[in-house]
Amino acid sequence: MKVKGIRNLATIQTVRNRTRPSSRAEMAAHLARWEHERVRVERELQIFEEKRANSLEALQQVRAQIDQLKQVLYDSEENQSEVTRGSLGQAEQSGKNSKTSTKSVRTVTLEY
Image 1 (cartoon, rainbow, N blue to C red):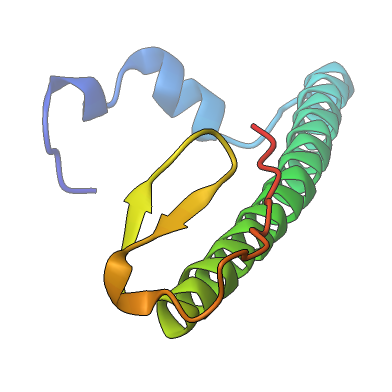
Image 2: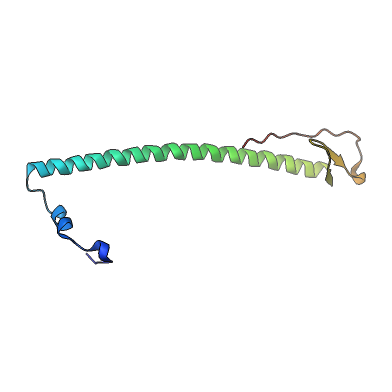
């Protein structure tokens, strides 16, 4: 084993733990430690999978919101050449694009 630093030096305890258990009690203790480690890793994996599922759901919602906003944005660009800010929920057309006097405005709800 190549020594990379002081933390990787072999001490008496690490050398002792690498040796084969000499008694049945030591084997049982090793088995109990490994069983405990297995349970911990399984619990960690379950938490990871739950968080992954939640993250995938959130990502799907974000993508849906992006698609919805793109659709509204690109539809409004096709229908209007220039849009200025009006009152809440309304868009006013400039003098260039006054073919129709009333125009319905799409509303998009965003949830955060």
